Length: 355
Image: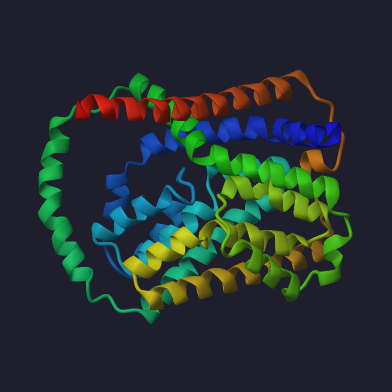
C-alpha cells in the first residue's frame, strides 16, 4: 500500500509544476481568444477554415467534454462540417496544459510530436468529412448566424471591456477554477491508472504485441471508447511506455483517446451525420497510426531514449515540487468541495422556491 501511495505522490509531484503552469496559460488564452472570434474565423468553408480549426483548437483550454458545446456553437455560427470536425479533433487531443504535462512526464520529443500529430490528424479528419459529406444545410446555418449576430454585436458594443487587471484575475479564476473542475476527475483517474500499471504490470508485458501496427491497433481499441482528456491520458501513456509499449503506440493512444470517446461520437452522428462520423473516425485513426509509425522510426534512426519523469528515476523530492503538489491538491480539493456543497444546497433551494 505504501508503495502505491509513493508512486502516486511521485507522479503528482512530477506533474504539479507543469500542470499549474499549463492551467495558468490556459486561463490567459481564454481571455485572449474569445469564442466569438473563433466562430468568425471558421465561418468560411474550405481547406482554409479546416486548417484554422486545427490551429485554433490545438492550444485552446478545453477538454473532451468542454469542446462539444463550443464546437456546436461554431457549427451554428456557419462553420463547415469539415472545420467543425477539425476543431473537434485538435482541441481535446492537445492543449497548452497537456503539452507542458507531456514535457514533464514524457520528455521533449513527445511534447513536440503530440501537437504535430494532433494538427495533422485534425486537418485530415476535416478534409475527409468535407469530402464524404455534403454541405446542404450550411447555407441555413449561415443565414441563422447572420440573423442573430447583429443583436449580439450591438450588445457587445455596449459592454465596456475589462481592464488588464480584471483580465488577469479572470484568467487565474478560469485556469485554477473551471479548468481544474473540468479535468480534475479524469486527471485523478489517469494518475491512479498510471500508478496501478506502474506497480503491477511487468515492464515486458506489452512486448508480446511488438512495436508495429498490431500494438497500435490495440491502443486504438483501448482508446476509442475511453472518456479521457489529453492531460489525463499523459500519465497513462507514460505507464504504458514503462510497461514496454512502443513510443508510437503510446502516441496513438494519446491521439485517439481524447478525440474518439462515446460522447463526442454521439454528438457528431447527431449533428453532422453518420457519413461525417465515419470520415471523422477514419481520419483520426489512420493519421494516429501513421504518426505512431513515424515516431517509432524517428526513435530508431535518431537513437533517442525515453524520458519518463518520475516513473524511471528516483528524483529527490525537492521542496518546490512538494509545494506545487500540495498547491495542486488543495486546488482540486477546493473544486470538489465547492461541487459537493452546491449539490447539497440545490434541494434546499428547490424546496424554498416551491413553497
